[in-house]
Amino acid sequence: MSKPVVLITGAAGEIGQALVRELAGNARIVTLDLAAMPEELAGETTHVTGSITDKALIERLGAEYTFDTIYHLAALLSTRAEHSPALAHEVNVDASVLLLELAAAQSAARGQAVKFIFPSSKAIYGMPDLETKAAHPRVKEDEWLHPDTVYGANKLAVELLGAYYSRRYKQLGDAPAALLDFRALRFPGLISAFTLPTGGTSDYGPEMLHAAAQDKPYACFVRPDTTIAFMAMPDGVKAMLTLAATPRQALSRTAYNVNSFSLSAEEFRQQVLAAFPQAQISFAPDAKRQGIVDSWPMGINDSAARADWGWAPEYDLQRCFDEYLVPNIRQRYQA
Image (cartoon, rainbow, N blue to C red):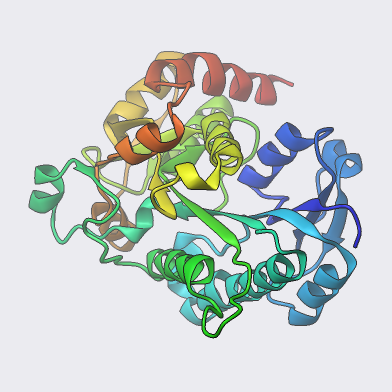
């Protein structure tokens, strides 16, 4: 077989671009996305343009490459998924099963587990009402697993399927197959300074910043008091790489919460105004999207990740804005 490589699906998206930048030069990378890679990253990977739902394409990749690690980032995000639930299931669940099958087959053939790193989401949680949300401000991994959205249900389904493939798949008989190594991260709202928001329901935060930097008015689609967790993109990438590097025997679970900071939409607005005093930010809650965000917890308990693999974010709220978001977004639009 050929030398093992890293596969990144959805690599042209926000997380994918950041991950490629971190891995470039340290691994042979194959990327898959419907879109081309940005010009500045085009030479860093072997890029395949195509759909994650294309079974023939996935089988061809499996025949052509031996994968050491798969970062499965491709997904239909929360807002669009609500409008196209059947398509969301096809992209978010069915395509994930294709990749799990590929990883399982290669694990068995090599006798060595393929690592399968999966970015899950706070959307897998479902708080029944605002009173319950306020009473449980930091949710643990096994609490409130009642997602209120197609996207959340899809993510939770893949978590459960990944755990199955990682622990039970084809384990009947005298000679059980080698199992893949599935690891999921439940992210808060990830904020990037270098790529534009792409339709996530928590994107009202970064949308405020990008609009303010362009001197454009912005109407936030949630109430001022709406509070959820956020994380700087560099910490999201750090979490994936740290989890991927942790020995399997150190892990007590297949899905981990990771967290950084929580703030309300009004507090986010105040941070933006501190950097861009002329920003025109109003509130015009959208009932559907507001209902989705209200079902997400205010914060996430990530004590298991801290205990098992030493997780700790580098960017707290103030450093995220002062050192990462504001200067880089300001430079983007000044240029």
